[in-house]
Image 1 (tube, rainbow, N blue to C red):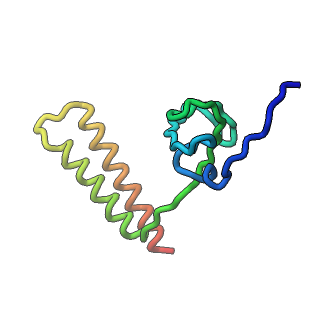
Image 2: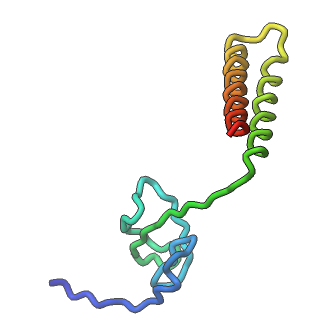
Length: 120
């Protein structure tokens, strides 16, 4: 067996932080995730003291809410702006015609959705 001694460090300083805090020197290391999985322990080197340490990450979910009426009005405005933007040419390209057609379909679906909410 290899002779390894446990290193004392302040777990509270290294848990739940926005950056990976080096357990040796306390430096905040910015980690750019590249295919790692949540809960996986990954080896990295501290940007400051150059000691190797392990990090894991947890993702969290936050929610933004708004009244459905506001969402509907904002989305409708966004779609209408898109239609206006691509209908400005007298002779639009085929892709512009397709975008306008798709936008009109999106608008119809949005209106149907809102009408169904109002009815219920």
